[in-house]
Amino acid sequence: MMNAIETNRLVLRNFRKEDAADLFAYLHRPRVSCFLSLKLEDMSAAEAEAEKRSRSDEHIAVCLKDGNKLIGDLFAVPGKASDTFSVGWNFNVNFGGAGLASEATRALFDYLFAVKQARRLYAYAEDDNIASQRLCERLGMRREGLFKEFVSFEKDGEGTPIFVNTMQYAILRKEWVTQGEARIASVDTEKIKKEGA
Figure 1 (cartoon, one colour):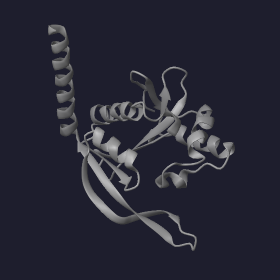
Figure 2 (cartoon, rainbow, N blue to C red; figure 1 turned 30 degrees about the vertical axis):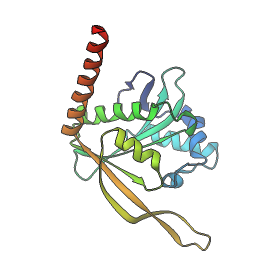
Figure 3 (cartoon, rainbow, N blue to C red; figure 1 turned 90 degrees about the vertical axis):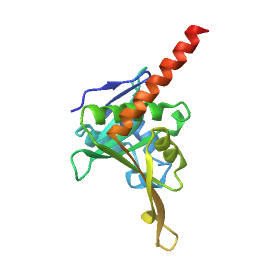
């Protein structure tokens, strides 16, 4: 099992059974269609899902450092090549707008590149999931392609699948490292300017 990762405001850790209620809070009504298959009907289903996730490193609980409240989750699934991971995120909408998703995913990317020795990370975002597209771009991921009518998560009133367009984003370890150096240089430059003022 993975060791917990701490950021300024968050703890990334394995799921626990006691996360069930917080997991239910955002999976009883998934906000985006790609999570409809994970919809939890009741607390019993939430308890079973939290228990299942607690036995794997693929799903990572994202908790507030103060109070240990689960506010969302990340996933990192190894691809066909052992140095490649499919990544994604799902957060409780009540904790949006504070940069917590960015903070959590940056920590995950650091972990995957440094500890798991990932060479490449990739993510999918449906064309109506603007929040995920923006997060990919904030993370410095490249939009690699658009898959037209790629996948269906729901059906119309007559039972016909509704296919959605899906974008693929990716980033290489060397790109992440270069960005990190640029972020550090930017912070150092700002610090020098403030000290010189």
